[in-house]
Image 1 (cartoon, rainbow, N blue to C red):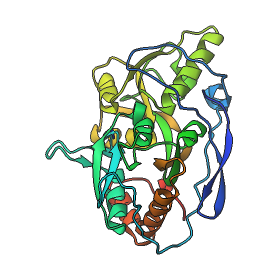
Image 2 (image 1 turned 45 degrees about the vertical axis):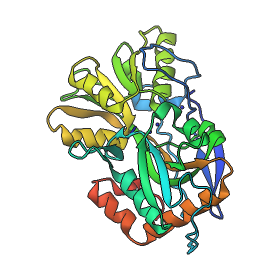
Image 3 (image 1 turned 135 degrees about the vertical axis):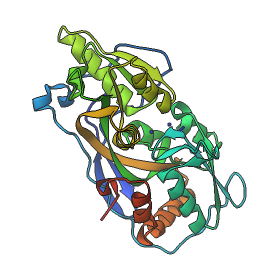
Length: 317
């Protein structure tokens, strides 16, 4: 992974094939930089309650698409025969750079490569900034985007999505959790690292405002564009915790055994989607057909095994 936004309950329906799925789209996209900030705007929701009372606001898995054998590649590709894909390649295990080869790898990379093959195309994954990834898609720098993008109402105004994954959010803390951080309300007065442009940043901004509104210190945020750099903040003891998608937390806990723990539990499980330009029905239909074929053919399941992902994060049955 190189863009994986105010905190409030939003209900919105999206069309998936011929099925309508209600998605409680909880969080809005916000513009962010790579500088530190301490508070944000928004009205605190039930997630701002004490840990014992916090509500886990999750969405149900999207309904699978109807079977199809229509694998027609769109005619308006940037480069004929190639599917140019934007991805923030700092977000393991979904998209990151193989240090040995310098090439993008990860679950998302393998998935979009397999989908492109179903369309008779070669996938070329290009590193993108998460902050601007949807704007860059609409500027036709990419044909599609796959980058652990949680689907929410703001993003649905910019792009259409093919849901392919279910992800929650979780905290990484030092081994032993010395500050007993178990939920967002525990972060008042703490130093927290987070990637810019993410729903996690918005949640932290809302929580920081809730902290100060309760007469407590706000959260001291360090906001960086690179998720790898965010994790390094914790390694260097510059922050007390980091907040990111739960698969990223799981990855770093496995890669750094004995160094990190999860703070509390996974919250707010929502669908992630492959983004296509708004109204581009040709590309949307092609991506749906290709995803259905890859999923029904067994490749989807094998990629979950390869990247050691939790089966609960799969879309559909």
